[in-house]
Amino acid sequence: MAAISQWWPNTRTFVREVSAEAKKVTWPDRKTVVGTTVVVIVATFIIGFYLWGCDVVLVPMVNSIYKLFGA
Image (cartoon, rainbow, N blue to C red; front, side, top):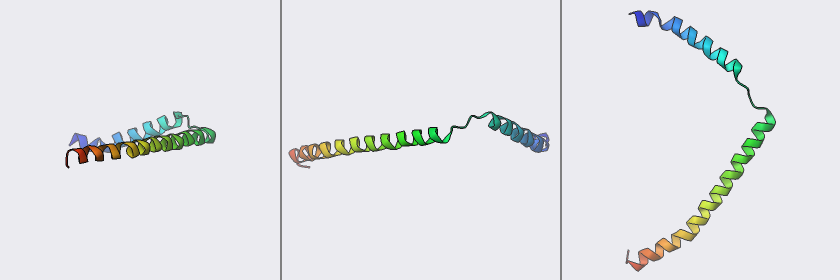
């Protein structure tokens, strides 16, 4: 029963500590967010095109191997 009676004080302490830690966070400015977003989008397209190229090259090779073994 002691654990249940301590629930509310523990919750209040937790919320106070979270609030204090959130005030210490250094949030990035708009320029940084836009820059990193552009990097992620460009990297996603580059990796996507690379995987597409691998698919274009490997699918005919795998199909020819299947035909060679009669599958």
